[in-house]
Length: 418
Image (cartoon, rainbow, N blue to C red; front, top):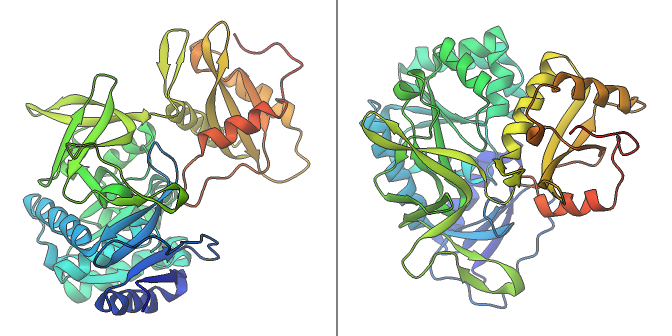
């Protein structure tokens, strides 16, 4: 009997999927959580690890996309550590109602369900359509609160938070939650400030598929006081930051990853440390050292002697795009080699709709950022209709650097910003 089961995670069938997962666990199988229409092929020519658990795609490590094998033991260790953190912050895990709107084939969507299994807490799926109907969402949660009189907790990514906070009913829903774990990307400064202004109980956290979700977390209390860190390590986690600011993690729930050529490979060094894909630094918080994420290690550039994090530039550009209602759907900023500066930033843009005159739009954007320091201003702008993130909602830096090398920028005939 095969030890591997590929399970297509269709959002409309989450309940059926989770029942099937439990059935295969009982049969000591590994379950690959495939996104809808996933074409990934997993060979069984190599012996699978002993035991049972999930196989889940990760795009967050510095080595690029890979498949992580996470045993039931690792999943449960993560849930227990998160539950202890919750209790230390005034909430009893088994008294909470977990609301989950994230996809099951992502670790951030799988773990809320597994925490419910571990904690024996109440749990409700929230459909994608309901997340886009703030009135019904608020009414749904209000009915749960009135019925159970228990605290509601959830996990959101910044894009969901941004969409909800700007709607009066979405805002009311956010304010009704006792805790909102927020991860997956850095929270833009203006969004964090607005969440504090509206007294939303955000708990920014850091984690990865390789670590079974969060390994650090900031309490809502510290967030509301103004900390822009991701808090402190959970009790089963050790953190260190090396000389070049790479974030190192040691925990008993690091994955075994299957990478290239159908070979299993440990992702930790001989002492059990895993080098994550992000750069970080310590910042003081109540006489302790909190962790602050600086940006992706594979995207940071040195431009004119300054270290620049393209993610931060992207966030600032998207704020301007939103404020001025510029018809750009998405933007990706990366570094390219430059003889004079070492490296410079370029911006790939995906415009809304077709038939748009792109050069006047880029001219407007360059005017709006004319006072930025030169190293943060994109040297070139590209029209990239096929711009898209990978299945894990991550940008693939190398892929788009190669695309840039083969395409001409919008402003290539004109003198670029200096």
